[in-house]
Image (cartoon, rainbow, N blue to C red; front, side, top):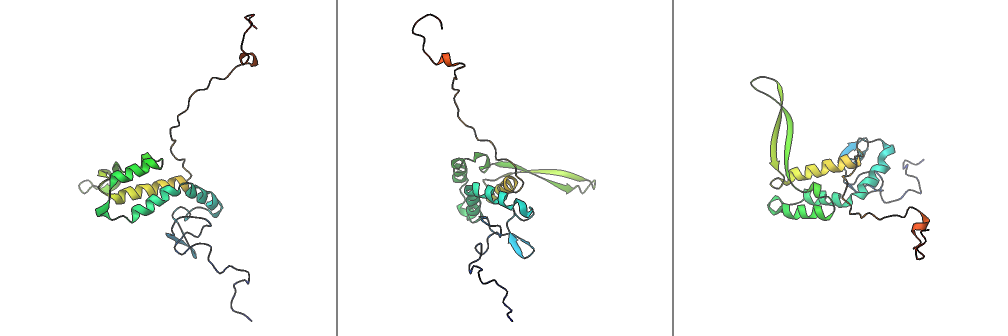
Length: 177
């Protein structure tokens, strides 16, 4: 009788690196424990049938994921918002450059006792943590919730197309056909 239940053909190496999401091929770090496994914030509350699509979207946005990872580990004293803004333009996401944002939350008014909406303006150039939070929200919205990435402007020129085959043949005779 054996107590070791691992099948003889099982791999000795785990499917993912330690600290990484359990979804196969997911490049994100594990954050949420769901049952016995650790998953990333994108896979955590999604059905298992959608994991492959989510992982594909994450891999398509790998540059954004690397930017988030670097920004999470930046020393606030060495934070350079102009460099971050330039890099976001370089990877094709100038809409995610550090900017001035308005934070909205609900608070209880101490005089009237009612719940009111409070708006505070903050500059992400002064608070890199706010910028990282916005990048993470964008990544989750685009990957887990399936929201489309904002359209990138594409420079195109109109190409005139012939309407009939006779338009392709030059008229040398002058008879009008």
